[in-house]
Length: 121
Length: 107
Image (cartoon, rainbow over all chains, first blue to last red; front, side, top):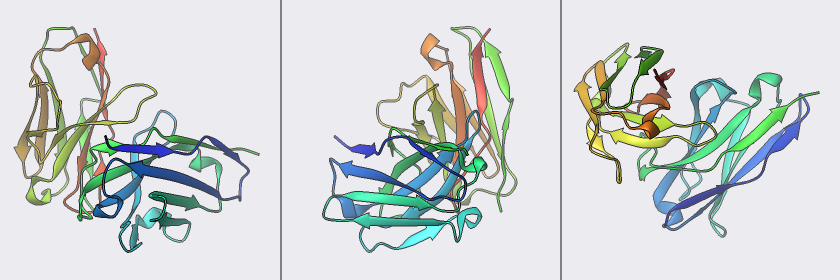
C-alpha cells in the first residue's frame, strides 16, 4: 500500500533552517510528483511547492521562493524539504503529499502524517 | 491569481441532516480541476472528491460534488457522526490553492 512517512517533530530558533524528510513506499517513486503543504496552528492549508522525483525538477510557491529547497534521493525513495531563515510564523505542521502520475497540477490522494516544526527563541 | 472562498465558515447541523458546502473561485477553474478534502483534528486531510464530481476511492456515496466554472458544491446527503470535521476545497487548474475551510459542527 502507498505510504508516505515523514520525519519527527523539530524545534528551531529563529533564523535557523529545518530539513524535513518524506519516505515513499508502495509505488514507483519516480512516477509521481511530491508536493509540500503546510498548516499553521488553527489555520488552513498552504501549498509550498513540488518536486519531480524523476529528475529533481522543482517549482516553488512565490511566497517561499529563496527560502525553500526540495530535493530527493532516488536510492532510498525519500524527498526532502528544507526551509531556511525560519521565523515564528513558520511554526506549522508540514505535510508531504503525492499527486497524480507525471502531472504538476494535481489533487492529493496520499498524505504523510505531518511533521510539526516549532520556531521559538 | 485565483482566490477560493468557502461558505459558510461554520455550519451547525444534526446527524441525519443534509449538508451543503460552497466553494467559489474568483475566476474560472481550468477544466473544473477542483477537489474537496475532509480534515479531522490531529489528522492529515483526506481526499473526498476530485475533478469537481468524482469520488475518491473508498469514499461513501453520501458525499457528492457538483459545479463548474467558478461555483462548486460539496453535498453530504445524510450526515453521520463521523462526518463532523473541517472541509477544504482545492483548485489545481493552476498552482494548487486551498480555500479557507468550512467547519461542520454538531448542532
